[in-house]
Length: 595
Image 1 (cartoon, rainbow, N blue to C red):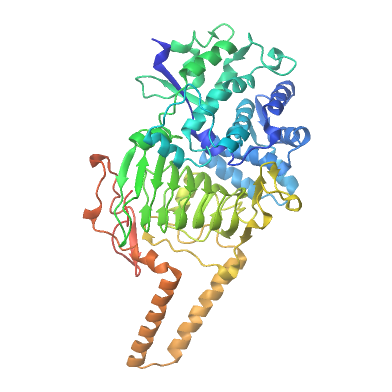
Image 2: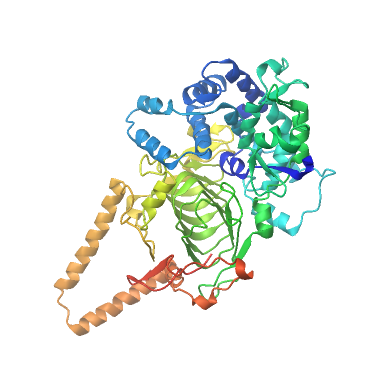
């Protein structure tokens, strides 16, 4: 069997979910990471697992990073790697019982990560490093390998926010930095005084196993995806990779050459999804809606961790979906406007890019919700993490165990408590390991290019400390999900914070007082009719003034016949009983949109 029959590609999730969407601190450059790689290999308690206390010592004592930033990296890596939902729920319970910093540190000290994989995770933070050359000329200089991009390539590039979704950027990053990545895995005894790997040095099989964080592959003709160390240690690549069964190690020089030869674009990335994923047309909801909305997904072929659903240009429509095809998928919502989107399934991650004037209600998101370049957006979610960058006039109602990340470029961001529910919400939360406590929705971190922002030393490249505010209780209203579903959840999980619950109670009290006043007026039948007509006129005026009329109109379900496929049998239409609309308290049909 020839080595050419083996393909190796960068995994999507480390770059999508692991690389923070901001230019990294200079303390995470290769120079410092080489020193860290030597340090952790020569100190007790740092290898092969690195605990929080030792990482805090390295980050704060050696790299001079703030402790909150050190924890942010540690926590992000922990979110990225797989944990059973039960383990996450148990950890959440322990953290929620901490009443002091010492108790919190005691719980955090129980956590550890794979040392070499954590080193690689820190290294790929360079993905979003701003290149001086690129910032001046806009694109990298052409090379002999440069080719004219196809329409799908251009669409994939346009659809990518920063570089986290861009599989071509992932491939380019690995190709350009592979030698440095491998050097971080070399044992200290095989390094020169400057910390660089010697040409004839070896890399152990266990060290190459950690490369599985970034790389995976398959033998051509087989659908089975294999970890990188298994592909390299046997089969067609064993000789080319310089693997010795005696020493159970690889020749660095041969391994580098073999990987460079075998690297290819991720067959489950955004480029492949746009080219060959299932594309579906969505029925139009209201008069004047533009027929541009489209969706592509690879959930029918991609393995766990690579499943994605891409939604683009949902304009003046309501989209509602609860489906196994969404469960565990990475969702990208791109360039949507004047839309109401409900994705009520447990999700892996969600990215909202260049959306405006819309409401997005999400099922529990296991890892992160990233909002980028959005305007006048309302997002309602339970999520492992929230990150917002380059956005304005956005309101985020969140339940999250981690502190929301506010990146550079934000203005007028409002943070509010999670304020809705749907019947299967708590079951969905349990399935992805998210609990109601701890809840850090109101404790944001402002992250700039050199770490956390000190309000007294604000710079143009950092978020403005005044870029956000907490939602005032007087402005607070609960959100009703207008669909009927199966399940037991009948209230907001964990309840509302006391000031917001008091505001809701006060509004309810005013309603009761109004009803009492009407009752005591003792209107006759004609007066009641006139009064009812007057109230309805004022109500419709309010609907038009606030824009809420569009939301109600878009809930009127289309006829089933209007739900047509764009590519024949590839269409995935919503089951009629998946989600039902509630209108005047009654179920009136199926979801307003099939996806």
